[in-house]
Length: 153
Image 1: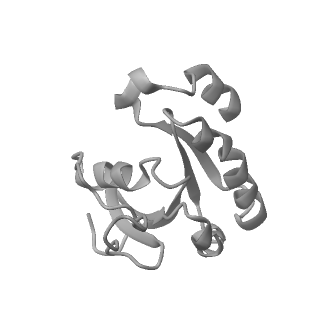
Image 2: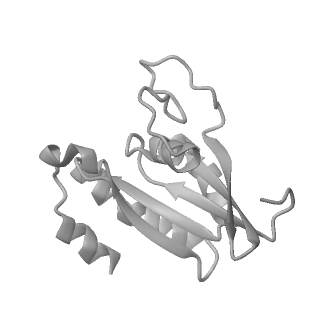
């Protein structure tokens, strides 16, 4: 793909801590799943994460119909102390991937909070994708597929 993209899109990944945003982004960006990734912001019982600001981003370039698309993929920290920074990022969002962990009712219940943040801070008409993550942990599922689908509609 060309150095200067024909199109640039800001895509923000939202959701509680530990829903798998960083792992999902690594998979999307590197086309491989990495074990042992450090959260965007480490928990107090972990060593400090490489990113101390509560946000990280990667660029994914795609070539579609001879056009170069650059996706700035913003990985946000789910901790409350970083929510004001997340709200600032939402102002420039072209798309949002709102993630929850299918093994955690709590993360699913917080989807409505994140939707409120998006409504308050995001631009009108932003594209939204609701994503139930950790499909590989199906035996621990707490959020039925139908419940996620119902909220998405």
